[in-house]
Image 1 (spheres, rainbow, N blue to C red):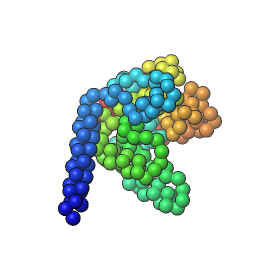
Image 2: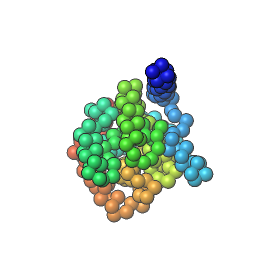
Image 3: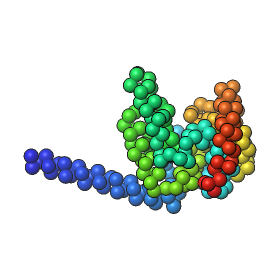
Length: 228
C-alpha cells in the first residue's frame, strides 16, 4: 500500500505540474503571439518546406472574416464558454452508433487543437481539446481567441493565417476582404488541403452561398463589433 500511495502521490504532482505549465503557457499567449503551433511544426517536418504566415491584429482583419467563420464554424461562439454541449452530445451519440467521431468543435476548441494538439478524431484528442478549450475561455477574452484562431488556421497547403491567405489567394490584405472573399476562405476550413478558396469547386461555391446567407441572418458585421 505504501508503494501504491507513493506512486499516486508522484502521479498527482506530475499532473499538477502539467496543469500549471499549461496554464502558464496559455496565460503568456494571451499577450504574446505563439512563435509556432503544433500544426505548423507538423507541416514543416512532413514537407520540409517553410510555411506562409503573417501575424496581424484583429483590427487589421476585415470584420467580414470573423463573421464568416462564426457563420460557418460556430454560431454560438460569442455566448458559449468553449464547448457546444448540444453538438457534443449529438457527435458522441453518432460515434456510439458506429459513425466516425466528427463535428462539434467550437472555434475555441479548434484554436486549442491548432496550437497544441494533432489531427485526428480519437476520443483522447477530443478530450484534451475540450480541456484546453475551457482553459482558453477562462484565461483569454473572446477577442483574443478569435484573433489567434484567424492567425493560426490553415487556409491552404502551408498557408496559415488569414493575412497570408488573403495575399496568396486574392492579392489583397486581410483588412480588404469582401464578404464573398471572407466566405470563400471560411468555406475551405473543413479541409484546406483539398479545397481551394482561389479556385472554388461547385461544392465550395454551395458552401459560400450558405455561409453568406448565415452571415446575413446573424445580423452582418454588427454581430462581431464587440470583438473590435
